[in-house]
Image (cartoon, rainbow, N blue to C red; front, side, top):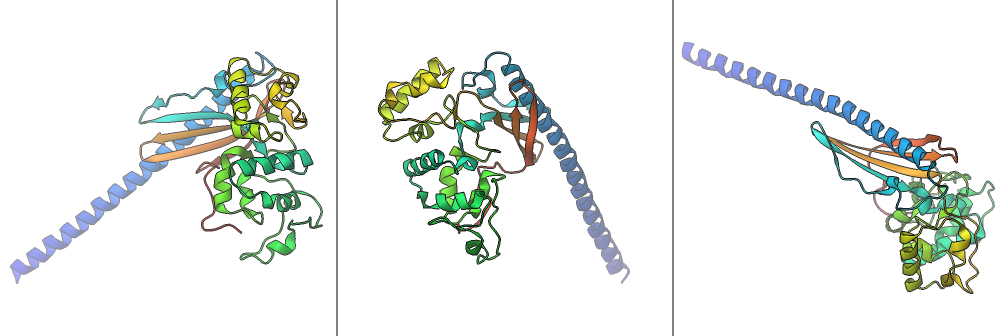
Length: 305
C-alpha cells in the first residue's frame, strides 16, 4: 500500500508539474505574441509615416504623377529585428472610382471595363441606386425593397461607398464578380478622376469605345518613357482618333493613395492598409486605416446576392 501510495503521489506530482509547465509555456507564448503585435503595429505606423513623407516630397518635383516616381517603386522586404516589413504604395486613382458611376460617361466606362474582364455589367443601375440619395428605382435598379428581403435584411446606403468591398452588398454582384473587379476599382470620396499615367491597360481600354489592344499597348509604352504632363497630349493621341474620348473624370495627377504594409515579427503577421489623401501643397492625411487582410480579399463567404 505504501508503494502504491508513493507511485500515485509521484504520478499526481508529475501531472501537476506538466500542467504548470504547459500553462507557463502558453502564457510565455501569448505574452510574446502580444509584444510582437504591438511592435508590428509600431513598425506599420512608421511605414505610414514614410509613405506620407515620400508623397509630400513628390509634390515638390512636379504636378503630375506616374509609375516612374520613387513612391511607385517595388521595394524589397525591409529587414527588422526578428522579421521584415513589406511596403507597397499604390495610386488609387489608377483604378475606377465606383462613387463616380452616377455620371453617364463613367457608367459607360465601368460597363466596358466589366465586359473586358468578363463580368456582367447588369448590376450598374443597382449600384447607381445604391449611391444616389433618392429612393426611386431605376430600370433594372434596386432600392430598399430588394434588400429588406435578404437574410439578414438591410437597406440601400443612398450615399457613397465607404470601401470597394461594399459592392458585395449591391444586388447582382457575386463574390466571383467582385474578385474579378477588385484590382481595378476603388471607392473614393466624390468623383475623382482616373490618372491616365497609372491606370492599368484594361482601364485605359475602357475609357472609350473601340480602342484596340495594340493601341493601348503603345500608349502604355509611351507613358513609360514620357509620362503625360497634361490631358491634351493623352486624348490627342492617334489611338483615340474618331473615338470622341471625353476628358471628364480623367487626370494626370492623383490625390488618393493606398499603402499596404505587411509586417512579420515572430509568429505575429500583421497587415496595415491606409488610404492617404494628399493636397496640392503636399499635406498628407489618413482617410482611413485598417488592420487585417487586404481590402482586395473577399470579406464575405459563400455566394453573392
